[in-house]
Each structure stands twice: as C-alpha cells, then as structure tokens.
Length: 258
Image 1 (cartoon, rainbow, N blue to C red):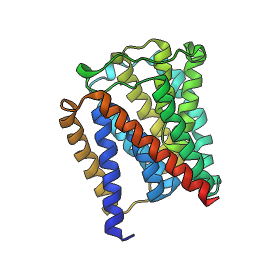
Image 2: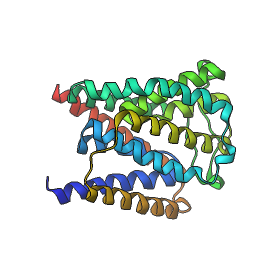
Image 3: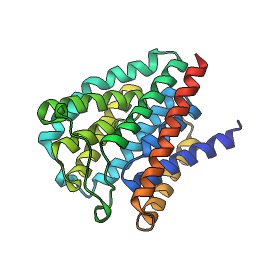
C-alpha cells in the first residue's frame, strides 16, 4: 500500500467516524476502531481512536458542561482510572493476532450490547428519542456506577470502545436524554485522557496528523448537515451494522493469524 493510499484510507475512516458521531451521537469508536486497527495495528489504532473521540467529546461538551452530574461522574471516572492500565497492558503484551482477536471481540460485544440493551441518544436534542433498554439491577446505584466505569475504562484503553457500559448504566439509572448526553461526553473526555496517558500518543507523521485533523473537521460539518435530513433510526442501524461488520472482520483476521 502506497503512502498516499494509506493516508487517504486513514482520512476516510476518521471522516466517517466523525460524521456518524455528529449524526447520531455515537459511533466514532464503534465504526472507526476496527478499520484503524487493521490499517495502523492494534496499539496505534486504539490510541488514535482515543485521541479523536476525546477531541470530539470536548467540542460537544462545550455547550452542556453545566449539566454534568459530579456525584455520578466521580465513581464512574474513578473506576475507569483503575482499569485503564489493565487494558493498556493487554494491548502491549499480547501477540498482535491475539490482540486483534480480543479487540474485534470487544467491539462485537459492545455493538451487540447497544443493539440489545440501549440506544445512545443523538447530540441534537430536538431529534432525540428516550433512552430505552433492558433493566439490569447490577447496574444501578453506586455499585452500578463502579461496574460500568470499570468496564468502560478497560474496554476503552484495550479496544477504544468504552461507551456501551455507560449507556447501559444510564438506562438503568433512569437518566433522560438531556442528562445523558453531557455526562457521557464528560466521561468520554476523562476516560480517553486516561487511555492516552496509559497508551501514549499515536506515532503519526505531521502529514498524517493533518489528514486526521482535516477529516475530523469535514466529518463534523457533514454530520451536522445531514442530521436534519436523514431519519435517525436508519442512520443508527447503518452505524451499528458497519461497527458489527468491522468488529467481526477484525476478530476473524486475528483468529486467522493464530
């Protein structure tokens, strides 16, 4: 693969992930991580996803930080801080094929959890349906926050996808969409910062960083432009289908390499 082709593919992956994030309020990591891992390798793909998802959440949080619930975020983020190192250790110590298999499996499980248990609301409040999903007693109260935060931290640093456990916690805590969005973004900012601190910064050239930054900006503009034109349900199904396909593909490639 030539350098130009690789950079174009990288930009396309980031652009798609950024677009669906702004279009549906979820999906950057679920859509982008499997492709980034296949293109850049497990370690670099995950940490780039951590950087990009964290940056997108910072921008999204700018208008809603006053609605963040510190009482809920403290146990969630504290638990994540405890498990992020374990996920980072996993990506560094396991053989590449095993790591790819584990990441593909985590992404696949995360997508299935979202499909079965909860729908993450879109960022644009006027178009958001209520959260819904199966009630799980273990994910309620302080203990539930610790369980969800710990699972999310491990999955985020190991595979770049830490959102589904927080979505399930929000469902079981009875949060409204208005409450969920800024708190999920705050959690994303914190846990991705922890993950980058544990895994390091992606080793990309200046040219590749420029492609990534430009793709994120274009994806955000495209997602916002499409948000009012594409029905949310079909868009969400497409995002989850792409994510599930990517997770299964990454897992299959890893198992084949074994």
